[in-house]
Length: 136
Image (spheres, rainbow, N blue to C red):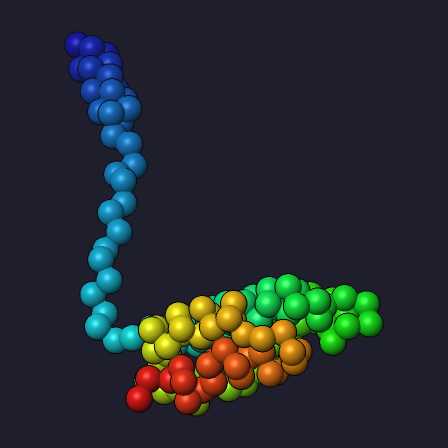
């Protein structure tokens, strides 16, 4: 009788264990109302990358990237514009962030900029300065 009771107990425990699997985890919603500590810096980096891409796309179409041109390579163009943009569009220069409409106007203005002067002149002509882009 003890054997039968023990066998039933073992069977009940093993079958119950088979049905139990790890419970799926449900992520908790973000409840912290505080801003993320590096969110603005990450956004500024993305803005700088988009400005660098738009600038270098225009430089490429103007023929100012290549051997003997203003920028030897696209990588040098990207690094140069990215560094200059990061130095001027950042949390300390734009504590309230970037104005999205002004940023879109900046990107659109690259296509309309003249090819008469390479480098900084294209970026300045595109209305992408700190005073244009920073929220007031």
